[in-house]
Amino acid sequence: MQLCRLQDNDAAQVVVERVLARGDCYTIGDLCVGGDDLMAMGFRGQGIGEGLRVVLDRVIEGELVNDREAVVGFLRDLAP
Image (cartoon, rainbow, N blue to C red; front, side, top):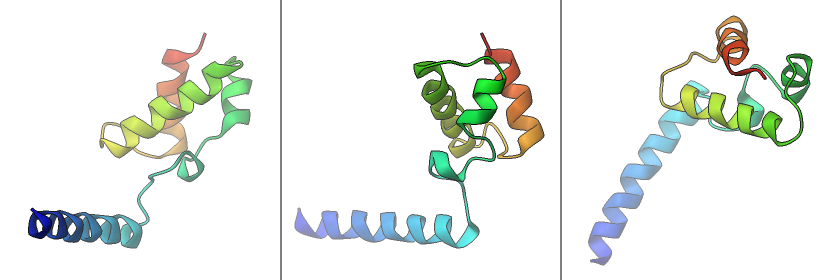
């Protein structure tokens, strides 16, 4: 069982190193937009954080490019 965990950890470390080397977006702070941008679009309160989390999830999954124009267009469809 311990050997499997070490192998899983090694595989995870390889993935993390690739992500970091490529400069992939993996935190809200890495997004090309921030809370001020969402506020300007009409998001308020918890909706700001929720909007940022949705964008981050889409970017991580490869469904959305972390490009300002693409993200703003996506957020316009979600805006209140």
